[in-house]
Image (cartoon, rainbow, N blue to C red; front, top):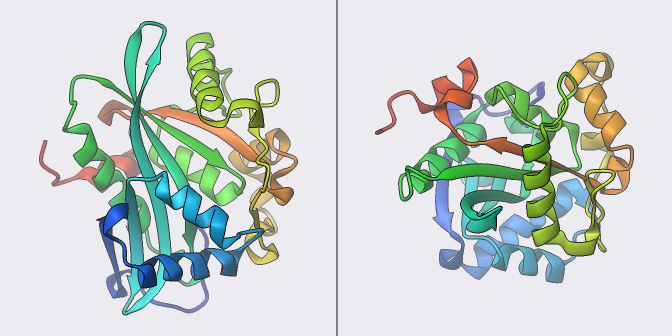
Length: 247
């Protein structure tokens, strides 16, 4: 979700909205699919429809009338070691390069999650993210202080157990616990213009770690990641995103 675009809309030209998945029209669903297929190979209409039906919300970013990005989201509860944990799971996500300069999708995603958390403010909340792209993985260190896996710390045993529990619960035998990877039956792979790592980027520790831990990312392998969704876990950039929100 990061990068530099030579031309395109500035931050003030972009708008974002959160919509319940059930409220989408057929035309809007087609628009999502078209954008996803533009940037991913291996996307079928049937697979996209099934994935979308599993989600609760869709965040969309527009430049005028043109759709330039979206992310789908599911909120659910799981039982782990005798307690309830609330999970935010991110599904299909894409942002067109023309909007890479803007944090609007990230900001609206955090705002939506904060709204959902207010329904159960005293319970644990986690973000379960699977990533086949280094830009998506980079979202974690930009906005969250602690997340796993990461290059500079071992995953604590309890966090590893929770990550493996949630991944196995959702993906069953498609989750490879020894590798921390989900290998989908019909993977979606980023097209070359998004999968390639620009010169100098691979030298960054987070990107280098992602490439090492997910060597099959080019064919659509997904690295499973987990972070706790608390205000204390936000970075300075993350705290800027929630400034002014109701508590």
